[in-house]
Each structure stands twice: as C-alpha cells, then as structure tokens.
Image (cartoon, rainbow, N blue to C red; front, side, top):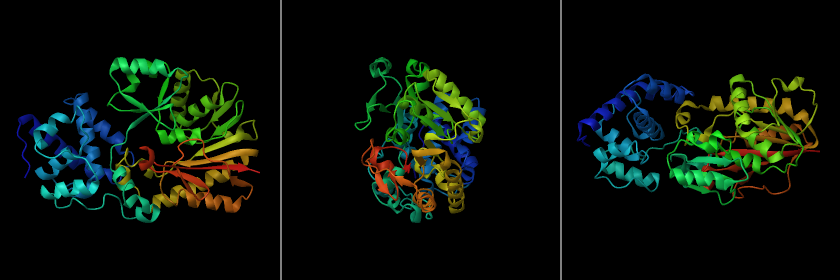
Length: 415
C-alpha cells in the first residue's frame, strides 16, 4: 500500500478523497461538470489558487482514468490515490504532493499499456481496463488503438492564435515573462504554449494580439479559400473564436455576421472583437430577418457531443450516451437544412464539429448531400494541416496527428 508521509500530504489526500467522493458520481451525468467543480473549489475559502489547480488536476486525472479506480462514490484507498497523483501532470501545483507520495515510483511516461503495467505491479488491480466507453468503438474504432488511444487520455495543450502581423511583439513579452512556446510548423500563427501560464494576464491578450484557440479550431478557418470583401454568416458562433479568425482572414472590407441562440455568448464575442479592434463583425440576433438573402459562405460549427475534446473535458467520456449522439446528429442535420439556402451559387457551406463520431460527421454530410446534389466537396486540397484524414465528403483531424482537439470539417461548394 502507498503511504502518505507528511501531515500536509495526508491533509491534501483527505481533501481530495472527500472531493472525489462528492463529485465523482456527478461527472457521469453532468455535462456542465467543469462549472460545478469550479464552483465547489471556490466555495471553500481554505483553497488558494494553487490549491484549486492541484485539486482540479487530480479530479481531471481521475476522470481520465476512471475505469482504473474504485466505482464513483466509493472511498479511494491509498493505492488508488497514489495512482492518481502519479498519473497527474507534473505541475508546480502537483509537484509537492507527487514528491511526498510517489517519489520512489518511476517517471509516469510512455503508453497507456506501460502505465497500466506499472500500476498493476503497485497493486492497482483495475489498471489496464479500457479507458473509453464501449459504445464509442462503433463510432470511432481508430480510438481504441495507438497512437490515438494513448493521446485521448493525455492532458490537452494550450494553443494560441496570433492576431497580429507583428509576432515579435508577443514573443518579446513572452520571453520577458519566461513563457516558452512553439509555433506550429504547418501554421506558424498558431503557438503551442509549453508552460502552465495564464495568458489572459498578458499585455498581448489585453491588446487583442492573441486569442486562446485550439490548433484544430484554427484549421477549420485556415483551410477555407476565402477572398477579401466577402460576406460570411456564422450561424453557431458561440463566443466567436472562428468568427474572429474569419474576420481576420477576410480583411476589413469584408463582413462576418455572427449568430448564436445564447445571448451571453454573443456578448463575449463583442467584447473579444472590440479587444482585437475588429470592426467587420456584426452580431445578428436572427439570421432569418437579416436583409442579406445570401452569403459568400455559411459556417455551421454545429453543437455536438464534444467527443473530440475528451482530453480537455474528460467528464464527457462518461456523461455522453449513444442516444445523445443521435439527438445531436438530428439537430445538426436540421441546421444544415435551415441554413444551406443562404449560400449563394458558387459560395461555400462549411460544416464542422469537435466530434469524432461517425454519426455526427460522415453520416450527417452524406445524408445532406443525398438531398442536395448541388453541394459538392471542394476538389482542391486543404490549405492547412495536410495530415488531416479524408473521410466521406470532409476531413477528420485526429488529436494524435497534431496534438489538438479532434475535429471534422466538410467544405461544400454550391453549384
């Protein structure tokens, strides 16, 4: 059995045991679990920012490896708790507890199978069980073998999108702060942040020179053959990551009309647009009443299950069901039916999800194309991230290809 040698480590262990026993069962049913966790952590005045980072990381690690642990609601024994600490990312917030609990353990690296072997030797009998829900096998069989399987249980990186033609301004500040980053080889305006930082505290963020946006999300917009002065409609804009990116690519003479059914998301979009100095984005409460009858492009970044974001949101592995997948697919098809008529002849219809399920991706596009023969996939290759995989009228970006979230995108041109 693992031991907890210091009173501080024992205290932290007991706090996490209590937290996990409370929240572990909830994660299987609550798709808004991150907000619930954050509220719970901030309610306890004993927790400073480092404490919150520690318990947040332990909780998400436990969710990634939930199949290897006691059933949610059951107490965590010392071996299970030590396994969670060992599997957690090596961060300033987790390092003291790691040193106290697993200092004599080998470095946690390698494949999932290698980690399972180590933990089995430590007495964790459940190590080695599948870390993905079985229903997902039919939707994405690739996910059950390496390298994608190993990738899906890793902690997701932080990607930034440069929103300036002067990257040296951002680099100078980051270097001064001791922040490390690596530009993408395929998309230099995308930077992978190598250290645990809060970019919202930087001058670059305050001045709108950067935005937090996954490389996969950036790929959706970067691949589009757009021209300056075009008019685009983003019908599921959310807080506007892709709207902002599209507005930057199109230039000041263009117009991006952003719509979402959530007013609070559009407020955030407007704040971000002002911070970036973008004046070519217009919030549209109801596209049906917009005076423009057609657009050069319509982006349907559809609500989805989020299976492509399981690294970042591991609770979704356990709170998603096949029934929900089917419901999302029906909603996605309805969105395409509603908005494809707004694409002008020769214009583009872009369908995107952050899902890896066949039902939400290939099946939705195949069904749409069977009803609308005047929409055809683009014959030209994609502009960005060339290792994206062609799949039934679109392309899939697997997290294991570029260390991104998972995405599907289909770009169709109207005859």
